[in-house]
Image (cartoon, rainbow, N blue to C red; front, side):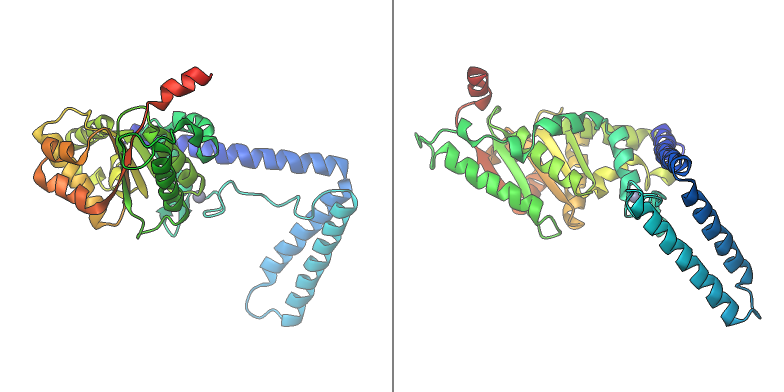
Amino acid sequence: MKDPVYNDTLIEFNERIMRRKRLHQQKIDDLYRAVPQIKSLHDGINRAGLKLALSSIPGESNAKLESIKSEISLLKEDERSLLKSKGYPEDYLEYKPSCNICMDEGYVHGQRCRCFNNLLIEKYYDQSNLKNILSKENFDTFKMNYYSEEKGSYPVSPKMQMEKILHESISFVKDFNDDSPNLYFFGDPGLGKTFLSHCIAKELLDKGHVVIYQTASDIMDIVRRSKFSSSPEDSQNHPSSYLYKCDLLIIDDLGTETLTEFANNELFNLINRRLKDDKKMIISTNLSVNQLEKRYSTRLASRVIGNFLFLEFFGEDIRMKKADIL
Ligand SMILES: [Zn+2]
């Protein structure tokens, strides 16, 4: 692939793994200096391993192979007890990969591993800042006491409504699978839609899911750029294809993008394709159902209305309340 973002990601991925392996080697070298017997045991294990490999040819007697195998397991046993007696964990010499799925190979069954894809998405979608936001905005820092218990003219109190939305959001994260609903967060600004979307993104990213969080305008820019710049043979693996295939796509600020026929069509294609593939979405917007129908084509509005769980945020702007409290 010629995409420069892909190449940068590949370089950074390999550098990260090499750095991790170098640190591991350094740790071992330090150990060998501190406890030289470990090194001689380890050299013995390696020599025996080589002997085993050389003897594993047709014609060698089973007895000889068995004796080398038991020599190795005795040496390993000695190594483990020596480590333990010196106060090190038994598996101190083993390399611990940063990814337990691909063991830092970057591939599983010939396909790029999620750890690589997540790095690619972080770079391509400029999501590296998302991690910083997410350390401050997550379910643990979500405050229910900003929402009023007074019902006023609403059908239920804002607090009660928020509790319902929070409950839906937590189950969405907990039971995230093909049967999860798509969520449509709507209501006035300043009521926590973005905050809650961040909470969900963080939890699912932590679980290793591929999550893309972008505003509707940025999504349209990405689609436009990829349509008009990438060559067709790349399109399957181009990072823009993750808009269609990531586990969760969070479309923030739907309704603020410039609406053209192109945007209307592409937005429909994106949402429709993800619905067909059972790929989940969260839409966060100020648009009510009526406004959604007015702004977009009937086919787009009806796909959204028929396939999303509508959750309305109402009450007073909590950003003002936060500012008062701080
Ligand atoms: Zn991996």
